[in-house]
Amino acid sequence: MDILRQLGELFLEAIPTVFIVFIFYFFLRWAFFGPIEKTMSERSARIEGARAEAARLEAAAKQELDAYNEALRKARAEIYHEQEQARQVVLDERARLLKAMRARAQEEVEVAKNRIAREIAEARPQIELQLPGLASEIARAILSRPPELSRGPRA
Image (cartoon, rainbow, N blue to C red; front, top):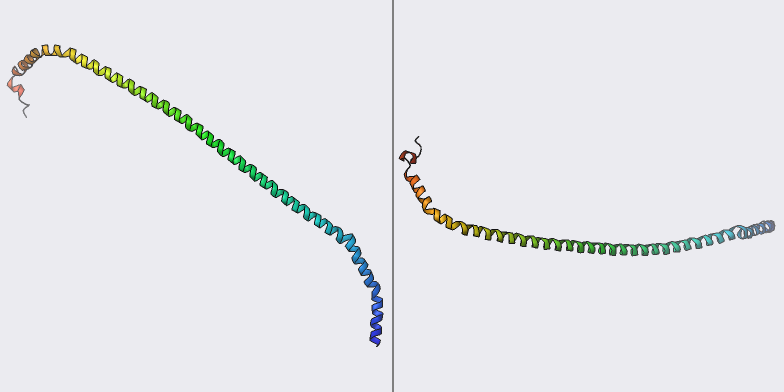
C-alpha cells in the first residue's frame, strides 16, 4: 500500500503543475492563438476577396479586349471595303479610258483607211494613164539588153 500512498502524494504534488499548465494553455489561447487565428482568418478572407476581385478584373479586361478586337475587326473590314470601292472606281475609270482610247484609235484607223482609199482612187487613173508608157519602157529595156548580160556570170 505504500505505492498507493506514494502515488497519492505524487498526484497532490502534480496538481499545482497541472493547474499552472492549464492556466498557461488558456493564457496562450487567449493572448497568442486567438489573435493569430483571427489574423489568419482575416488574411484568408482578404486573399479570397483579392482573388475574387482579380477574377472580376480579369473577366472585365477580357471583355474589354474582346470588344476592342471586335471594334478593330470592324474597322479593318470597313477599311478593306473602302479600299475595294476605291479600287473598283479606279478599275472602272481605267476601263472607261481604255474604251475611249480604243474608240479613238478605231476612228483614226478608219480615217487612215479612208484617206488611203481616196489616195489610191486618185492615183489609179494616173497610173492607168502611165501604164502603157511604163510597159513599153520596161519591154524596150528588156529587149535592148545584150545577150551576154542576160546570162549569169561565168565561173
